Image 1 (cartoon, one colour):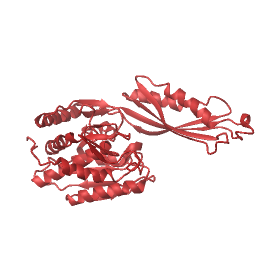
Image 2 (cartoon, helix red, strand yellow):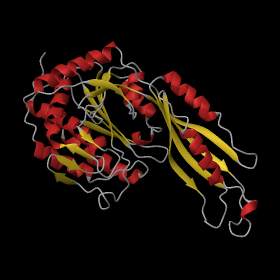
Image 3 (cartoon, rainbow, N blue to C red):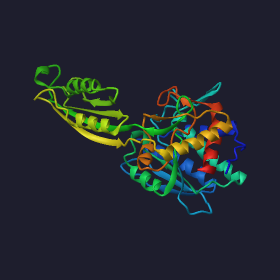
Image 4 (cartoon, rainbow, N blue to C red):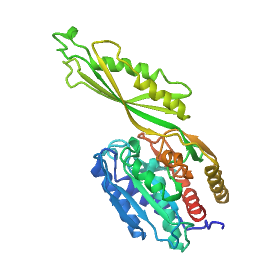
Length: 376
């Protein structure tokens, strides 16, 4: 069956609706803020006719929303999977990244990663329903709350829900060339703590052993382990309480990414075997959240070919690639469920104060999603 793509997507209406989402700030670690965003999206889905459930959060993180749309078939369906948590703290709208439009660009916190793509996917479902066009299979939308920190509280939910479906569509941002993602690299996070010996930094500096100094040495050593096969980076560090005290503790978080699982496994072994530089200080390394490598198989490539054919009809190319960065598609792809990622808006500079999308990409990407929902 050939998908019907001549749907009345309206750029201005979509951009106005997306603005309400962007202006509902929802950083991962602010559960109340995430829940406000989940409520906004849940209400939107309920108005569309979905049966909406709120799934309580855990680990101090926000709730999730699951929406199921009516369909005559009971066969395993299509899972549209997205996250509504962001890396931008509440207040970003007033301090550096307010919603604005400049030519073909629209700016705002999480507009690219990934509220834009999520909004388009839901709009595609809505337009199909208005037009009376059935999706090929039952559709479920799962909106999660902690993807930006590796999905520690939702991985079990994601995998359980995905197992009930035959295909997964992930509207994470499009690749810079407008392409989609058919595989993702493996990622591991680590929590590090150094412990030193306190002293008065002014009167008895020599008696202390600084945990911050030790962590600084470890950071340099860790980042110098980076190779073409695997990267090592430290992105968070907290140490000390008073400048006139030699710090007793220092905490850091590091991340490693590899294209192959065996390279990540080797990185994990290296990280867990790190030692302190001296006997007067100690180092503890704990493994955090891990995303498995997702390598494309024949079913994924067939799914891409189907998407590529739809994109060609719309009028744009749709290359594919494996990508870094990680997403919840790592989990479903590694499970062997045909997964197509990177279906969201074209844009740039996610996770920065210049995050934006290309407005002109909204309608073509929405049509692509609508086409996939009719044919996969």
